[in-house]
Image 1 (cartoon, helix red, strand yellow):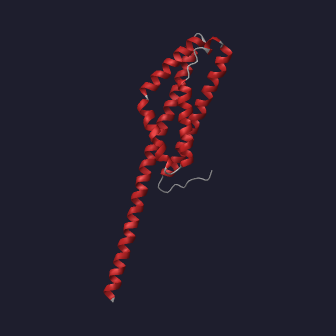
Image 2: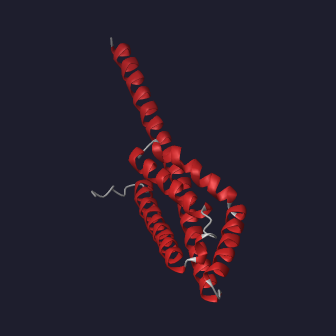
Image 3: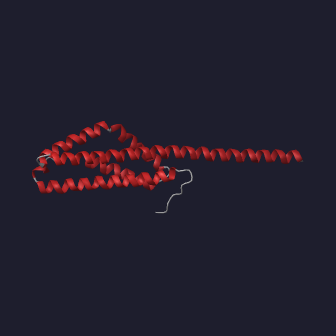
Length: 171
């Protein structure tokens, strides 16, 4: 009878250790994937802000809105070409985040869509009408700024989940 209890205890302890190990392996995989997602989001946010800074300096150097629009399109095209891999990697972060935070993944998807939309807009025809052009370009700059801020906040929230004992704040 004693050997039966010892065998049963051994099975229970083995099962508990296996569950414990599985829990920590899953937690480690989650932390690794969230860490990668946070890195990609922060890289994208940095690139968005860098492009905005470049466009601001180009705006200061341009002689007319038509001149600025040509430079803006050139800068955006070069930015898109040089950061295509970063954009793809950042887009791959969506399913990683969706596994843990589906609502934030949807928010991230909407940030990508608005960023893509504003980057591809060509406003050459509007550059002849300064008032209309200024309104549209100001709106685009505001969307870019809001998107960068939302991206930063999202990355911070995910980074808090990434910590070992850091609690998720109530928001």
